[in-house]
Image 1 (tube, one colour):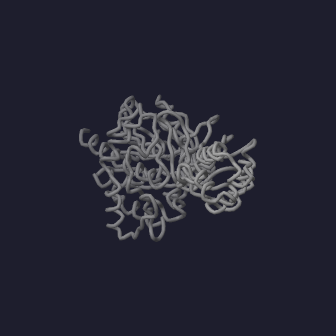
Image 2 (image 1 turned 90 degrees about the vertical axis):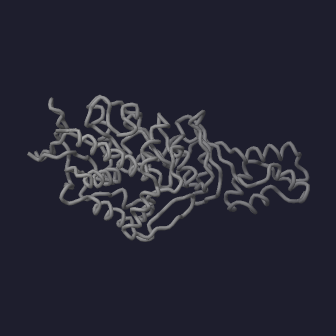
Image 3 (image 1 turned 120 degrees about the vertical axis):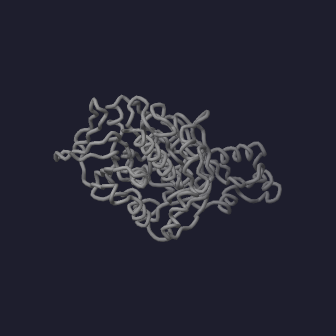
Length: 404
């Protein structure tokens, strides 16, 4: 019988880190991975350089049905803690923008570090495991059986298989099915950090494919509303770029997205321009501040072709207002294939925020992207993987100490 203290399903960021932390605390860990190698999503992240954390990561940077859930784990394992680990391994890094930290070299360094953190005498990594069944006996022992008949047994099981975003990397909704098997609720999963698609009249903007500009983008409603000041990119399908990916996590079908073009413009800039340059046209002013193709598209839609001196202040202020809150009505997203992460997941109401353990099933844990905690773009989801994995490993060690 292959007996362990804990079975961790999934050798991605959360699973690898949790395995290392648990192994270092003396636990015998069976780390099972469906793919042929661990950390595949880590390797493609950040353009191959892994945006491994964010200096500003805190609870306010995450979406969840319970906005307080992430507080405990994030407080106990911080960006500074992971940076210290990275530096201990001599991995050079740099800050890009907005607190985003990347490897100077390759994401392969992060995967190698996480594997090195797993004590070989305690952590057994097995790849290419297709799980056929997961059961829990009357004695509280979990049994994971592969489709080839191999089986692993342990009194604790950690779900770290992530969400279904980027299925070409082997991602699936396995975590949700397993959670439901044990009676845990799942918050409806949906693509997040994903490009938005445009149809109808907005489809005309797709002719601007390849054009980018700094904007302020808004989406969501009520407490679920958010605004981000970064670049937006027009694509042949609709809208992308950092600002759009950020608001996509808050956007729901049927809602609009608001874009502020010229976010640094003064409040009454068009009226002032009329006073200073009455013979200038709106198109000319826009071309001075925006890429020409975008300027022309906006000018065409605003339809103010006269010299500014011949346009009323009322009409200029209406144009200012439109540019300050241009409304798009996306007809969808580019889906899980292009989503960097999955929002929703195993309901936080089912889990302890301190231990990541399911209240209904002692010994069952869930961490990382599998849980209904979704970070912003820019290293926040990796920080949640590290923090939730750390909290879980601590709890596993505490539970092991209590067992006879």
